[in-house]
Image 1 (cartoon, rainbow, N blue to C red):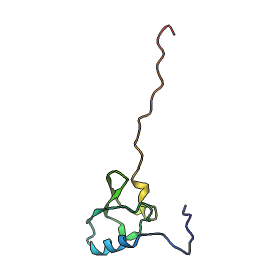
Image 2: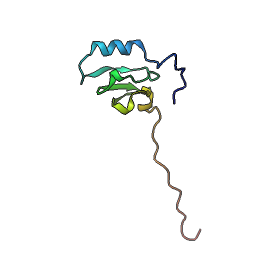
Image 3: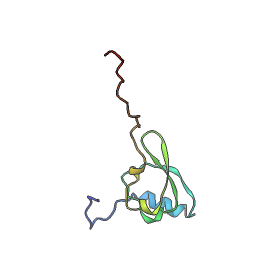
Image 4: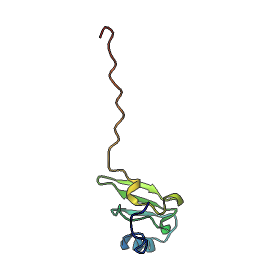
Amino acid sequence: MSRRSIWKGSFVDAFLFRRIKKNNKRDSVLSSKIWSRRSYISPEFMDRSVLIYNGKTPVRCQITDGKVGLKFGEFASTRKRRPSRSPHKKRKGE
């Protein structure tokens, strides 16, 4: 659910559109990192592979139809995954 006003439209940084026009090949990878995690994914990015910066390393992401309208930052997690810790087993006699 978008919190941005409808009359404003979706936010996309202008340099992302310039990069799309520059690399007009359909299956090209946008070689440089996308630092703008706040930008919405527009239909021009469909069927492309992009590198989204998560604060430490770039994460490769394939843009499909279901991802259009969401933000780039949703697909590059900034947190480390920790395995769930199982509770300690009790010893016999305790």
